[in-house]
Image (cartoon, rainbow, N blue to C red; front, side, top):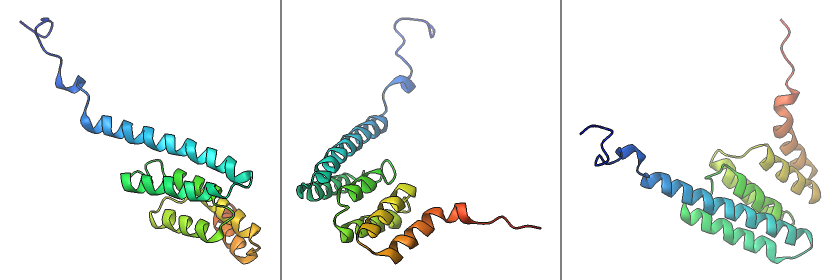
Length: 142
């Protein structure tokens, strides 16, 4: 009897780990939610006012699952795009992503666009400045 014996059970490492299954399940839920956000964004772009409330409900479910930031800020960014006609909602969603430390360039783009469309030019400039800041830094000559 050795490792080649047919009666030898497979090593424990080959058994699926519960946390791996849980992670895969969470990822599937988040990806499904992201697809739903894309559908809601299409609805909103056609003027459907229900899109934002549905996006917020989808985000609430992700928060309850503890997966709202499982793929970084993607869920918040997409919800922000769906709710672009509601500047206060976009500001709140951006603040949530920023508080979690996961806001990214896409988050700032949506925020700047929303502020621009709401004619908050100073706010849009601030978001653009934060977005473009790293590109605008002049190297020190020395």
